[in-house]
Length: 524
Length: 39
Image (cartoon, rainbow over all chains, first blue to last red; front, side):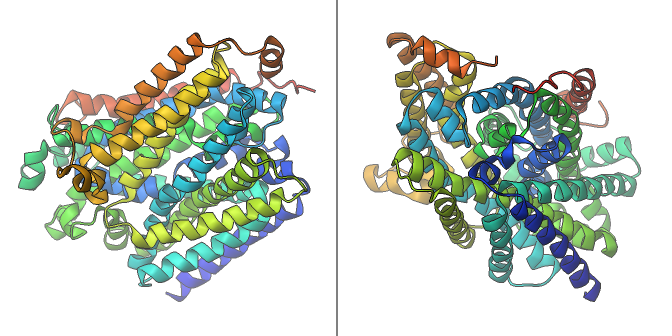
């Protein structure tokens, strides 16, 4: 226990030193928001990866994989192919160049300047500022559950203490402080995850034998899950079953595509000075994501076999029904104690690196995008307004962290990814690739995608509609439509609506000024 | 295939590794491309 505390303190000292280094090098608003556009490619790639992957992916989705099985590995494929390869090669380079041409500092700002619309920048900023804390809370719950199980600290105390430590270096360090600490944290996460998968496979007698052992356990799937379409941990759920829709429409598609329109990731593209940095980041990012989600979604299902061999129970029974506790319990009960201590640091790192960027983006969304640009406030108070925004984002995140129910990490993450995808993705893609896209098309697509996503969430998608209760209050029915529609993710419906609105309205309205387009596409 | 109960799941596993190899090859081929600074 004493060793644990010493290691955690040493780790925090290094983190604060890097935050301080970031603060020392922050002179301008550009430094604070996009790290002066001069960040090292390794730091950028690790920062992108460490921001992308958090306790939500490892503990939340790892726990979901322990419940649903290996079919979740399709999300790893999309994380690498879409979240790294497509994101960097096709979105990153154009975002960087357009960001520089238009002197944009944030994701909403590049959209607002490209379509010459303060409304787009302000609305995007507000959507991010209001809903990002739900995703941030998912990450915060992940680390708080781990602290609760491993350090025996009450859930609420871990949640508050962790938030205070994080607030200190984000509010003062700016994006430079965030990215320096990210690079260290990403490296630590990588090493621990590789050890975790090697240990797990060796416990079960190698790769092939481990998979075969898990395949032979299909008869142990609880009856309740079988009724929903569970076919065993090494098989896909039954096609068209409720579980199939949850795995493939919410987890794989919703999160896999939604990564392209994540504001805290898109802003990373604007922090490097040339395309070579992005090319190099593809290599580092691809390996890093495989080591993160690939391992989490492999160890999750295999934990059933290890738990069954050692304790005669499957994972969900070990965690007493809370999937967010499966990975922490696996680390605590199965792995050696030296590993558990270092893994705790890796999870602190995973949570801190993602939360710090979420808080930073929450702050810039309020300070820069809404307060300064959309409301037209001037007078050099933008860093102060951004710091105020960071503080508010942290408070909202703590509120959600204390309020959300158990087993919620993967669902809360998928909600934010899906919302960003249907609200921003068609507009973002058109901004970078389609000169014929117009301001009216972008506004309609953004607002239409947002409304469609929320309508489906409140009136159709059973999980949220039942919890919110508005549909029942207005119509007397829990959801307006029955199966399968009530298990289809909002993003499956809202994203196509948003795409159609973008195309139809743009073609029906007049082209933007040639001079403006020339400036936007100056370096492409 | 690979000890999995169905081929769809096995392909998810295989494609994840292939996508990583694609990222490595892309990164190596383009390692020095795009080094000119806009200014």
